[in-house]
Image (cartoon, rainbow, N blue to C red; front, side):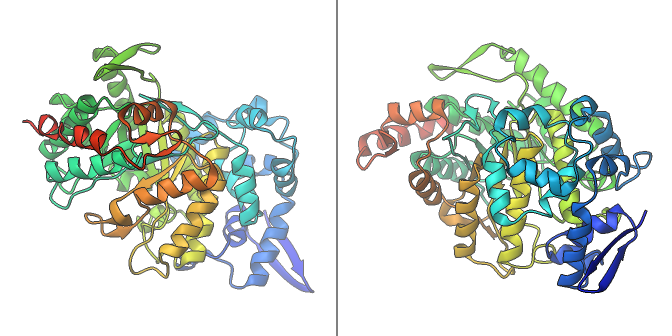
Length: 481
């Protein structure tokens, strides 16, 4: 099926929906590398003009990747809420944009329709939106999840403490994690990217993080971001798993390049749920964390990371643009009811997002797409040292995403990850965003901050050295073998 559009007497033809979606996308170096991008601004505008007239029913009827050849496409179709879609089917993409920005699309309505909206529909409407549109539409949506605490509520901004260490030194990891806790960070998760992909190292990190949580009585969760198979092997050896992590993408072939399949994700989730049950953590049960009982959600046990360009880097994009593929990754994630999802927006590199303008746009797109599809979205506001970006541009995206209602960000010491060698956001940035936007940590975590003297009222305490020394004094217990 051909799509045509004319701009100032110049006619453009797009061979199919896949090409139309690609050429309507905002400028991305990854799409250019793949040979999918519009050749000019005029062609991009023509594609947007034509896309605005495509109905949502037509998008559903024409998958960008054949479901007989791709299990992600099949999953999207199998989980589509066709009854809910009936009220959207006749809308054009342009009308869908107007609906999302209108008062009719309130939080309750968007929650009800989230499985009626396919990833391709979400990607299509994102291509017609300005940055401001993406912020406004996403700000309406709150997707709340539960683990040892509650994330995603209005007025809450959580932070993942990321205490990575270049040699997986446990003392260094614990000291860095405590540094983050003393800045009021860590309510999203204390999550370590291991330097060594070994079962022994992962198990040691998991045990150490659990001792830290239990010794200090922190109502939060831990995660070691190794490959899912390594984490499950550590689980077999007795390591405690709060959240099961995996990077995912928007095509079957891209997921295979990560060494993962939908069936492995299902198996992993079920094993962690069983593990929680053995630990005495039921669907509506309670578990003691130190001396503080905390609710632990039965279903939210997964943690996924994504990023535009991952399928292209694996040569598994099927001629589909990177925004549409990113949306499809979220279509995978939502089926597994994750506690956390985040786009590592600038981490893959300038081959896919060349500069600060592209990184900012991608971060706003990813957050909007994930929220619209029902996910608890966070973002690693980051860039590599060879990208045309700096900390000021990261600050700009951080503020825009905070205004958009992002669930959580990264907390990295001094914004500089010494193991992964990239630039992210710091503990200080978390304090600044909470103060600037009047936001607070997760409620259970905030109560702990108040009880320990780290917080005074709604802010970091100006004094409280005695409380800090008391926490530091417990580190020997954490680091015992």
